[in-house]
Structure formats: C-alpha cells, structure tokens
Length: 275
Length: 327
Image 1 (cartoon, rainbow over the protein chains, first blue to last red):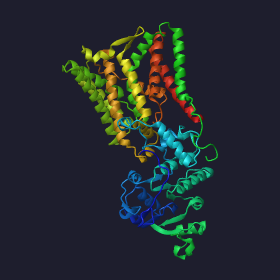
Image 2 (cartoon, rainbow over the protein chains, first blue to last red; image 1 turned 120 degrees about the vertical axis):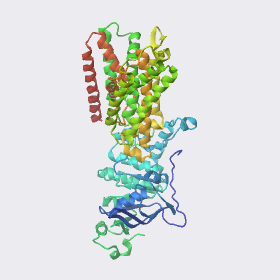
Image 3 (spheres, each protein chain N blue to C red; image 1 turned 30 degrees about the vertical axis):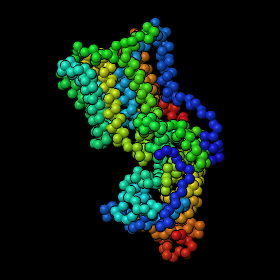
Image 4 (cartoon, chains in turn red, yellow; image 1 turned 120 degrees about the horizontal axis):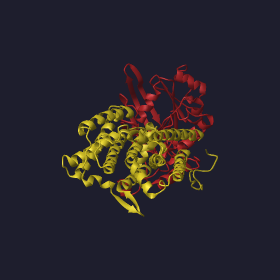
C-alpha cells in the first residue's frame, strides 16, 4: 500500500459483463434455509440496490459476498475469476470494501487516521519497515486529496471523527471504502442511522463513488433512498433473487409488492425488469 | 458538507487548545506548587524536585504499562505485585543463588514479562475480562511472593542491582539514573504511541474494537503484545524499586495497583480505552508525588494525603466528563 489511487477502472474480462457474480449460493443454518440457490450479478459502474423483507436471506447473500460467511455451496466470481472468501479481510484483499451501518469508525481518532486505519502509510526505508514509523504528512496530504476528489468538505483532516455529525462520520466510512476498493464497494444500510439531510449527504457521496467508476452494492430498507440512487434493484425473496427491477419504470409501490410476494414478477411488463 | 470550503483548502493548521482534561491537572499541579512553595521553604528546590521524581519513579514506570493496557480498554490489577515478584527474583538469584547480577536482572525481567503474557492469554484465550483475570493474578502472585521469599526481605544486594539508585549532578542537584530511565521510557512510549502504526492501532483497538478488527488490525495479537510489553516494563520498575530501597521486599507494590491507575486517570486517559496520552500519565504521577511530598513538608498527617488524592481523582474525571459533554 503506497497511496490511495484516483480512478477506479473495474474492467471486467471480456468473458463476463459482470464485476461480481454469484451462482447458486446455498446456506443452511440447521433446518433454516437462508440462501436457496441465490444468484447475483453486479455490472461495472452501477449502483445495485439489494432489497428484501426481513428473513428473505438478503443479509446472508451480502455476508457471503463480503466474506463474513462462507456459503455451503455455490460460486462467487470476481471479474470472471472464481474466488473463495474465508473472512472480510480476505474479501478486502480482493478489492471489496464494506461500509457497515453502525458507523464503523474510531470516534476519538482523526479523519486521516480513520481513513488509513489498518493501512497506514509508513515512512520509506527501514524507519517504516522496521519501526513501522508513520508518514503522517503523506497520510494527511492523501486524505485531503481524496476527500477533495469526493468533494467532501471538512475543515481539517486532523479533527477527531467524533466532532463530526453522524452523516459526516458515515461519509468518512464511505470515503475510506472508496479509497481502497479496487473492485466493489458494499454498503450495508449506510443511511439507516441518519436523519433526512444527513442521509441525502451520504447518498450524494455514494453517487460520487459510482461516478468515479466503482460499482456499489447498496443494501437498504429505505425505498426513497433506493429509488433516488439505484441503477438496478435486486429483489431478494425466500432465499433467492426474485427479480431485477428497473427503478426508472416501476413504481415504489409495485417494488414493495414484488418484495412481499403480492405481485409475481412474471406478471410485470418487460420494461419494468432490468437485466 | 459540500457547501462550505473544500477539504483542507488554505486553512492554517490551527493549534488545538489542550482540552480541559489535560489543562485541569496542569492547573492543579501549578496551584499545588505555588501553595507548597509559600508554605514550606524546603519545597521549591532542585533537591526536593529530584526527590519527588525518585519517589514516584517506579510507580510512574508501572503507570506506563498501565497506560498501554488501559488504552486498549483493559486494566491490570496485578501490576504492583508482579513488580514485587520481579524484584524478589532479581534479589534472590543475585544473592542466595550467587548468579551473575546481570543474569539475575534478566531473569527478573523475564519473570514479569511472563506474568504479563499469562494475563494476556487468560484474557484472549479464556475470554476472561481483564479486571477478573488480573484480580485473580493479584491473588496468585501475592501468595507466590510470600512462599518464594519465605516472607523475608532480601538484603545485601550486589552493587549492580542498586546501580540505578546512583546519582549524577546537574547544577548541584543529584539525580538518580533511575529517574533518567523513567523519563526515557516515557519518551519512548510517547513516540511509539503517536508516531508508529502499532501505537495508533492501540488507540483504535480501545476506541472501537469492532472497527479496528474490520480494518484488519489483529486485536488478539495486539492484546498479547501490550500485556507482555507491560510485563517487561514492570520488570524495569522492579529494578528501579530494588535500587531505591536496596532490598528485595515480598510486601512491596501493594498500593501500586491503584496508584498506577490514579496516575493514568489524573493524566486524562479514559478508563474505557482509546483516549489518552502517556505524557499525561507522567503528569498524573508527578501530581500525586508533589501532593504527597508537599503535604508531608508542611506537616499534614498522611491520612489527609490519601484524602486529597481521592478528591483529585474524582475531580479529574468529573472535569473530563463535563468537558466532553460540552463538546
């Protein structure tokens, strides 16, 4: 790790149009089937919302994609390559960053420190290698540069994260994932703990991450938020994907109906579905 | 956040005012020094200040270890008793076993390190909370100290064991090497905590363990390293103690568990972990030392010394809470 990179070019290999793909994922907890042959596809440069009722197996899917659980069977591909994640750290090493809803930042530490937590920039030479000495200036400069890239205006990178509002804190978490992700950013309910204005701020940031070229998987219960930013909507139901919807055509009410099973996706008109 | 200035653009680096939690103790220290200076002609002198530093030296060194542990949201209640064991091992091996004093010192350091390591294993592997793990260790090592020494102090130590008690002069004031070692250890600890990646990981681990874990910081390994290094530091404290008292004492260190925590808390480090500064701990240790010394010099009975220390602790933490609520 030398520095954060600017542009994210997730160029899939010609064999697949997907940055990330999952086929036939199965996960059972005793007699409970959390995933029952779940499929998943993420396209380059999109925001894919993943929605589903409680117990639909949506979080099992996300956990499998982020390395938090290991599926019983099924395959996950990253840029067409078969991958096996044993832990979130594993997934992270493969360029997948996850933002958790519970504001996973260290509040007493500065913004720059949080951005580089666990991936600090060390001084060159033996000072860094042997004594793990921090290159604080470089970390500060990189933090400023990166936050500017996301137009995330903060007075000083040296202020502790706890002096920020909830939305700004989540912004730091988002910025951090965007800084280090090479393939995919997964956001698990990033706006759930936030007020309206704060939530919009984070949505803005999510769009900027997408516009920088990184595809985003957004898990959310908040339909207005989903409809505001998503390019496609993956609806999860009874342990598998029920449909992929096009938020530009289908209504919010119909989407909820598909989610709850009140509408059979087969009855939807073709333009309401996405591919 | 998009409407104001862009990130960090053109803003001068503002010097942050020290928070109330560090300012408060500093003010308390200043007032104490002024009051004691006016009340006792013997207080304000280089010799007396050197004496205060000598008096606090081993507790202050212990408090470095305690700071590291408290920063990762742990605590060590076996700190003083493990130090006493380290001193006993050094003294006994160097006298009764006739071992080369340098090897005896090494054995003492390894002993205290070992018990720090055992604490870390009980905490990380058996998942016993640090408070309980080290409380248990306090009982175990207390018994060990008495049986190992036969409840006898060990006298007639070779000069190598008391070398840290020797002095050199700066402008007519005699300063012990033990004091210098203490100050050097503080500087090293401060540097490691603020300038290296593992140092920052300590703060992260105490501040938000879950976030730290998800960032790839190996919390368990960090815990083992912190308690083991703290153990090594207790060994150094043991050496300073032995040099200062000239004996191996099975009853030493009994008040140091709480004294070290007092220094840490007075210095503004949060008992919940993740916040604080090791130089604050030094300040805390000095405050306790100045009050003890000053109250003694103006002839106030020693019971009131612990009364005032008690008030200081509560005031320091209360002040910290108030300042945090305001911000």
